[in-house]
Structure formats: C-alpha cells, structure tokens
Image 1 (tube, rainbow, N blue to C red):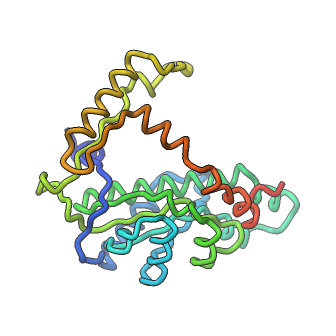
Image 2: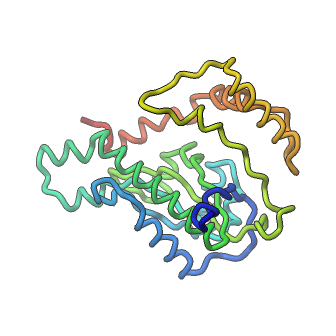
Image 3: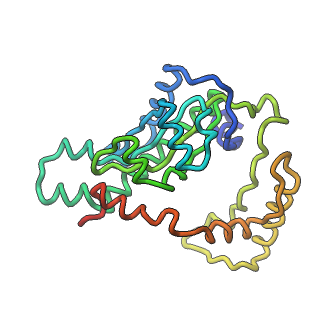
Length: 255
C-alpha cells in the first residue's frame, strides 16, 4: 500500500477539533494543493474564501445547523466563480451567453468540488481532519450576502478542517469508517446496470450498514442504507427550494 492510497482509504469525516488554529503556512499549503487539482479547460473557475470572523462563523453555524464548525482550526467556503472571467473577456453576445450558461455553472461547480477534495486529502496527509459541508446551501442567499459574493459566483461547499481530537494515533477516539457500497453496485462496464430494492447484494449491504450502526462506539442506531436513503429523500424539499432562484439572482441560468 502506498502512502497516497493509505490516506485515501483511511478517510473519515472529523467534527471534533482541538482549539489549535491552522497556521498561515498550513492554509497556504492547503490552497496550493487545491490549485494543483484538475480544473476544467484550465479556466480555474472557482475561488476559496477563508472565514475567520467569529461572527460570520456563527452565522454559518446557524445556516448549517452545525455550530461545531466554529471550533474547527479553519473554515473554507468553496465558490464557483465566473465573475473573475467576466472581468477578462470582451462583453460580446457570445461571451455573455457562455458566462451565464449552465455549462459554465457546472464547470465552476466541478472545479470547486475537485479543489475541495484536494484540500481534504492534503489535510489528511498532514494529520488534519475535516468535514465537507453541503449544508451551507440551506440558505444560499444568506451565505451570498454574508460573504459579499458578486454576480456569477455561487457558494458550493463549506469545509471545516483542523487538528482532530479524534486522531488516528488514538483509535478509541477516532470515528469508525462507514462501509461503502460494494463496487459491483456502483461500478459498471460499458453501460448502466439497473438495481432493484430486493437485489440480494443490496440486502446484504443493508445488513452490513445495520451492523455498523449497532456496533460503532457512539451514536448507535437501528438503520440500514436503504432506510437512510428513504430518510434523506423524505426531507422537506422547501428547505433548499431557493437554490435555483439564488443561482438566477447571481446571473446563472439566464440564457
């Protein structure tokens, strides 16, 4: 096993951090790792905002419902960004249409997501822990106002990162790793392979997840993977119903 695979295979989301803040050098290194990640057409269509103001972190805690983020060593917001490109191109009908398009929105989202994973992996190689937080989209307009985001930008993900109190060197304090889907349920050859709820492989995986939740050290519960997905899809869709409107207010999807 090489060190990179060891880091990737040992990934866990960390939500408990020491009081130690990341140093300027650590933040610079993590941003450099993000910058070296793949980017669509080398257009680098994302930006990263470090949120260090305690008042703003408290607002993000309210939005996400996870105030523990305020105790992290650092907090990043990953932003899909076509505004920078808006400053670089002549305002023709073609460039304007492209910048506001679904295609360029997705490119910015892809770039931001890929950069986020690069920060996570780089952080874990430095014995830092993190959690990626899509919950900043619980109130996207409020995040946009909080961070003074201009047109053609959109907050994609939050990232809480820091020195974990749950540490690999102290396994009893480190969260157990959730078992992933068997590869034959998510990796296909030459085309998609449909799955039914009574597939024996899924039934077996449900039992694996049930056993995991029953046996882990904290927050035991009676749940399978199928139950988890049902619960996720049963959430009030109005909670994030404003995302499309917020995107359009930021200038995307107007063509």
